[in-house]
Image (cartoon, rainbow, N blue to C red):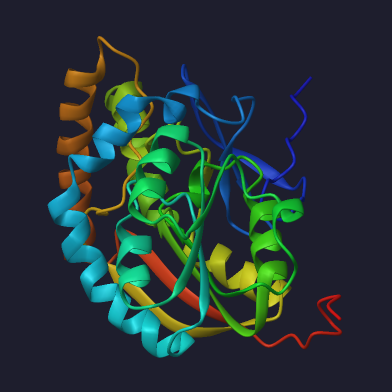
Length: 297
């Protein structure tokens, strides 16, 4: 008797297929929205709440500064001048919020790490910073001109619900920004090839189990259409993300697993560039909902 198909965390459907089965988990792929997902994992990796997680993010400060310096310009054009209000979900070391606050925007953020919240709160005492998951009870509907998920939505096992919450928090004409690893068909096929060599190579490539949901380009299009969003900008990137969350690997295995992940990421980046396949997807969508449609007022 075959195992029941787990519910897709993006669309809620149960029309999936087993794409990859390894000792570290089973990867299902949804036929409806093309999202992949790992079933039966903890909702949040507890290591994200440790001080070591923040230090790991800070070790990429220089790359993150360069990355966000480019994107801040585009985002300011999309959302307009201050005093627009922005929410960064999974703000990490705070590079994005820091830059937007410096430009005069009102900033808010949600982060699983209390250490990250405390550190950024000392720098930005006026920011509205919360610890935990994105919860609609924490914010009023239609509060933000921008809600951003920088390289974190894939780590949320209820990604579809979090996306829906983010849409409800947008003001009419507000912008939803997503950055996720590109886990389209070519990328998942590469994971399958790696799994045949060694299961650990596939795990390193997919950044599992920290990453639990895997977005194809068509998954983002499906989400946007379902929630009435229209594209503002689509920017595929071909190098490694500057805002990565790591893989949640415990010590003492961190060192060699990081080395494996770097080599696997590099191998995929070279293959992807040759094939014109983006490594990371960055999308901006605009909400066209009016206040009455969003339940406001």
